[in-house]
Image 1: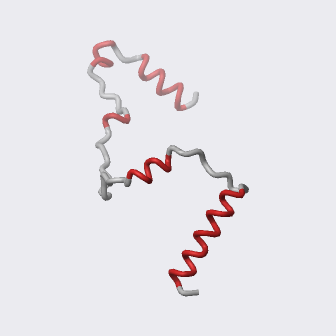
Image 2 (image 1 turned 45 degrees about the vertical axis):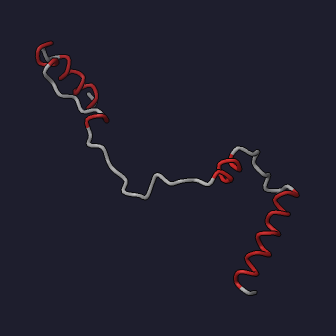
Image 3 (image 1 turned 180 degrees about the vertical axis):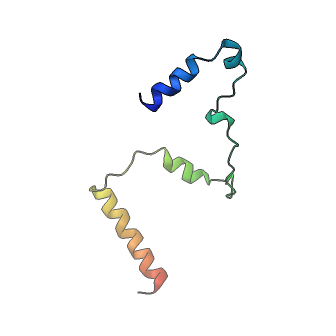
Length: 80
């Protein structure tokens, strides 16, 4: 017999009273984990509006233009 069958046989051999008082562990029984990270964070309205726009394709002319602008600004920032 496999372990699963043995476990099932053990449960089948319990009386209704024993099962009613049994404690079965579920995910809800585990203590809740807390994440200690900053938040909630205010998001600028322009950022929220940008999230509602259609995504830019990674091979599109629009991305190439955006990447070029970012590249120019990064060069100015780093004086290169």
